[in-house]
Structure formats: structure tokens, C-alpha cells
Amino acid sequence: MEQRTVAFIGAGNMARSIIAGLLESGYPAQKLIAVDRSPEVSAKHRETYGIIANEDAVASAKQADVVVLAVKPQDMETLLQNMEGVDWSSKLVISIAAGISSARLSEMAGSQLKLVRVMPNTPSLVSEGMSGLYAPDFVSDVDKLFAGQLMKAVGEICWVSEESGINAVIAAAGSAPAYFFLFMEAMQAEAERQGFDKETARLLVQQSALGAAKMVVANPDIELATLREQVTSKGGTTAEALNVFNNKQLTETVSEAMQAAVRRAEEMESLF
Ligand SMILES: NC(=O)C1=CN([C@@H]2O[C@H](COP(=O)(O)OP(=O)(O)OC[C@H]3O[C@@H](n4cnc5c(N)ncnc54)[C@H](OP(=O)(O)O)[C@@H]3O)[C@@H](O)[C@H]2O)C=CC1
Ligand SMILES: O=C(O)[C@@H]1CCC=N1
Image: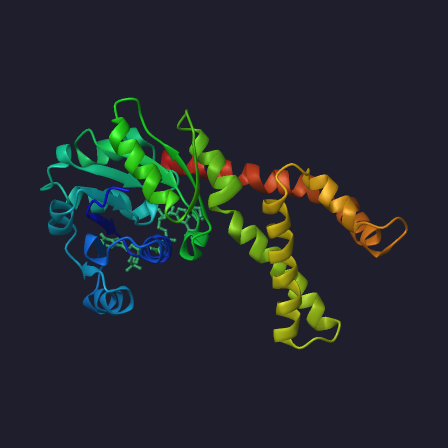
């Protein structure tokens, strides 16, 4: 892939996950810039990743070919207002923020940004990310290709043709690691109650989750329902456990939770 200089403005949880994944994929450290708010944080980024790190968003954006906007949605407007000295016309801008539309980002920047919206997730850290991407029509194929390759370096990607699709990606992937972590937390806690020490309880749960995920990936032609049925012996233990999930309406709960994530993203679009 092309190796453009990429500046991450806001080097928090998500940006660091992408940076670590990119480095792991062989992206050159001297082509990555992390901008955060304090010299201590920048020093840590230099030490941990060997990348360029500083607190000057404007200078870093000027130096970069690609600017990744990675601050929290509520910090975006102030950031872009403070970056008014940047000539955005020659830059590809990637926003990973939830709940701020491409039109609104250009409005905040006071300039029509060549923008790709990316909705990544934190497993990018271990090169198992899932990112959804959207670009308005006027963004060039070369820029779209680069954004896609950048995220492909840290996991899988899918493009959405409508910007609203980004909110659906949030529900199905951006927020999704947290759903699985919650499920695993609940399982670990119950395994502990059943007598395992914390480490063993975690091992039982994490290895089962990893094994299940690997089986899903290794068997693209087998429906998820079939994989579930292969575990579920007639009259056995799994059936009893699944009955509890069904009686407590797990499927409906998951739908409601994903719809709530989309609704919140839509609400954020009116807030920021
Ligand atoms: N976390 C996730 O799983 C995902 C997050 N996202 C999106 O990524 C974005 C970042 O989220 P996340 O990484 O979790 O948030 P974090 O709070 O971990 O990271 C944001 C970072 O930006 C810094 N920051 C804020 N304002 C500025 C500024 N003006 N100049 C430089 N740095 C600044 C913050 O510093 P300080 O702490 O001092 O405020 C913080 O270190 C959000 O918009 C979110 O919607 C998207 C997909 C998944
Ligand atoms: O919770 C959030 O708003 C962000 C977006 C997706 C994951 N984290």
C-alpha cells in the first residue's frame, strides 16, 4: 500500500488501537504522527510506539498527507475551529467520530473536507478490527483506496453507500466488542461463583469465545444457527442454558440494544 504520512489528532483508545495495528502490519513509524494534549502523553507515545508525537495539531496536520480526526465527538468542534490555519484542500481527512456527519465536519472546519468517515473498533489493536467506511461522491477513488487499505491493514472493512449506514456499523461493529466483553464478564463472574479462581474462570470463558469465533470464521458456509445446534445435544445441558436465554428474550434484547446504539448516534448528530 501507499505509505502516506498520517496524523492522528487525539491519540486515545481508538487511535492507539489503529496505530498499534498499523505498526504491527509494517507501516513505517516515521510516517505516523500522534497528537494529544500533554507532553507526558506524547513522550509515552514516542516511547511505546517509536512514532512522532506532539501536542501541535496544526503543525502536524500541515506535515501530514492524511489527518485522522480521533477526538471525542464533543471535542470535535473546538478542535476544528482551532485548526483553521490548515489548508485542507490538499489533505485526505478521515473521521472516526461517531455521531458527526461529513457535512457537519466540513462546516466545523469551515472548508469542504475531502473526507472519509470510518467507523473502526478497538480489536484493530490486535489486527482483528472491523471498520465500516463511507465517502461522499466527490472523494477521489485514490483517496478511498488509501482509506480502505489503511483500515484493511488492521482488520476487515466494508463500505456503506449511504452515510446513515455508518450508524448501523456502530451498532454491529464499532460498539460490538463491548457487548461481547459484557457477556464474557457475566460468564466469568458466574464461573467464579461456581468455584473457579478468577484466572481459571477467565481462561474458560476467553478460550471458549476465541474458539467459537474461530469456528465461525473457519466455516463461512455453515450458518451460525447450525454451529449452535452442533453444540446443543437433545435433552442436554446446552439446551437448558439456551432455554433460559430464550425465555429472557436474548434475541429481542440484542435487537433493542443495537437499535439504541443507532438512536444515540442519530441523537449525537443533532447535538454536535
Ligand atoms: N473507543 C472505541 O471503541 C471507538 C471510538 N470511536 C470514536 O473515536 C473517537 C475517540 O474515541 P476514544 O479513542 O474512545 O476516546 P479517548 O478519549 O480515549 O481519546 C480521545 C483523545 O483525544 C484527546 N483530545 C481531545 N481534544 C484534543 C485536542 N484538541 N487536541 C489533541 N488531542 C485531543 C483526548 O485527550 P483528553 O483525554 O485530555 O481529553 C484523548 O486522549 C470518538 O470520536 C469515538 O466516537 C469510534 C469507534 C470505536
Ligand atoms: O461508544 C461510542 O460512542 C464509541 C463509538 C463506537 C464505540 N465507541
